[in-house]
Image 1: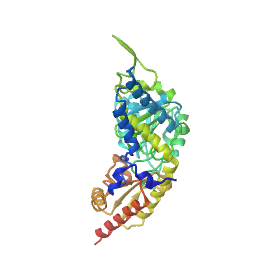
Image 2: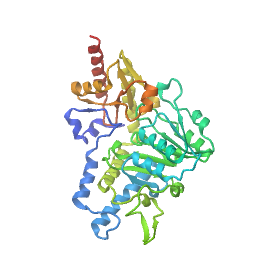
Image 3: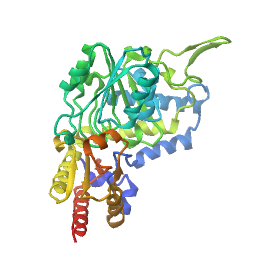
Image 4: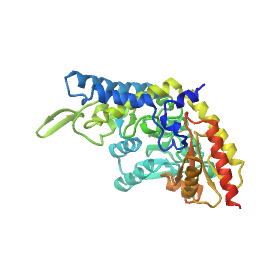
Length: 404
């Protein structure tokens, strides 16, 4: 069980009275993570890999250790399957640009996707003449739940890749990825998961899932911005060309030829985000100390409280599945109010930070929510029941004022 009040001491911003319910956009960063980055800058600030002096050796050791920490965190076979990126978007683009597409290939995705896992496949379709099949949730569509049977109906032997979100950033719905992975592999297709909203909030086991690619961002899991991860299953690594090549990716160069590294380092061109990567490693340590099972259980409790509280208010429209089928994301609208106005009111009147708009999911917003946007409140392990109560009471006051 989490000692939430003790955990909150690691986040000085919470001492200001801010109620932060925007972790789906970007989480807060605890002091131990910041201290790990400062230690790098204060004690062994140097570039990695190519230096023989002891500062570079220390930096290199710490940077490589991050790969091992992440590999263990998601149960990869080895750290050679872990690539440091800037964010989820770069990881997905690495795969979309790196696979060798053939005319007639098919990509299967869903309408639940963040733009980063949607527009890239439309670009592949336009550039390489492949087909893109878009799976929609079953009725009622506003629950946003994907059914493996719908993937089985469209995945065939032409399918090269299935690219889906592990958990929707707008509705919070959790995708049945293990079943979809089995269907994809039965037809010789790869499975790519957008793990931006899952890795921070639940135990993710890439071997149990059976995915071939997993992309996620550090800034949603207590790490700094500017660092992320792309997992590529080891025996698929050779099927993907690096997005960038240059320093750090090379075994040998001649006047008219070059040879790339065979390992995952072939994808990490140039000087990497060293301090940010060290921060990512510290964030992994921090989450493991708390326990992903404890985090998930705490968030589920808060999500149930938020769902029940908001569902009981008149003129509040909720979207997404029941709490048991989603992560700690709740999307809603209040009457005919513009969601930005609702978010601004929550900020000004109660110091509550939420997200509003289309949430980088135009197709989902237009075809499932069928409104210009929505308000999204998202929880993390540092949130409390009292904060959720404050959110519900403030929305209730807003409804009352709207009806006066």
